[in-house]
Structures are given as structure tokens and as C-alpha cells.
Length: 173
Image (cartoon, rainbow, N blue to C red; front, side):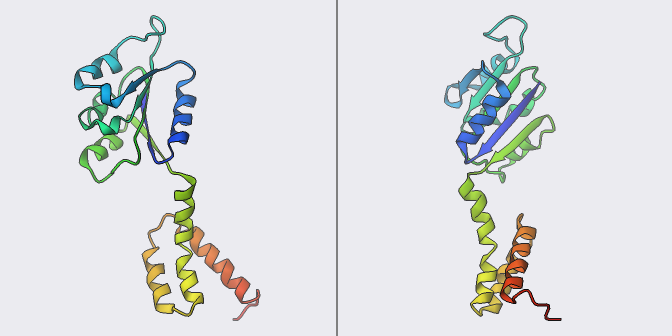
């Protein structure tokens, strides 16, 4: 079946997604109780809920157990449905995290809190605020820093809309 990694800061959303994917009955394993020796049993073993059925497994906070987390690609072809819910965001600068997330047979989804998602959007309004305050050079520098920002189109669209309002909707051409 598959391995899914749900990571980020919105623990409630991750748990809801895990329960939706796994259904009503699933096994739960906590990372602090798992050793390398347990992995074969978890990924290749039989279900507790009936003979011949695929297992549905929730692994909690496995990223806190580096030696087990980095072995996930070895089990990517498991016939069981496995969901890993991490403890917080994954540090994608670590080679072992990149290797796990880069495995083509492991799906991954990041969950951010509402505060994080909206904070990123409002950060993009800072250049506009600086420009309105008459600080053109600061505004240009902040705009330059935003060029690779994921919300750049939204930010620039918002800024254009605000500029049009300030100009009274008049075409100054």
C-alpha cells in the first residue's frame, strides 16, 4: 500500500488527516518505544484485527527516533497502510530527511497552523507599508527579498489593488 508522512506544526490537522486515511481501526506505535529490531515486525508483520487483512498503522513522532526514521525508504513497498505523524516540522536541511522525503514511494504533506499561513501573507505587505511611509529604498529592498516568496503573486496583486485605491481608481497614464 503506502507510507505517508504528515509533518508540520498543526498537530490537530495532521491527526485528523491520519484518521481519515487509516479509518476506524488502526495500530498505534510511539517512536520512543520503537527500535530498529521492531521495524520488520511493524512493516512486514500481520494485523491484530484479522487474518489476511492489510494492517493500518499510525507511527507517532518517528522523526524523534532518527535511526528508525531514516530507514523508512527501506520499507516503502510495504503492503500495509502506514501513516507517520511527526513531532513538529521536519528539518529538510538534514540529508536523512531529504532522503526519506525524496523517496518516490513515500508521500508527504506539510501542515501549518493558520497563524503561520497568514503570517507569511502579511509579511509581504511590509514593502507596501514602507512605500506609503515614504521609505522608497527600504520598500524596494523588501520587495527584492520577496521575489522568491511563495505568496509573491498574491502579495503583488494586493499591493497593486491598494495602489489603485490610493489613486482613486484614476488612470494616471
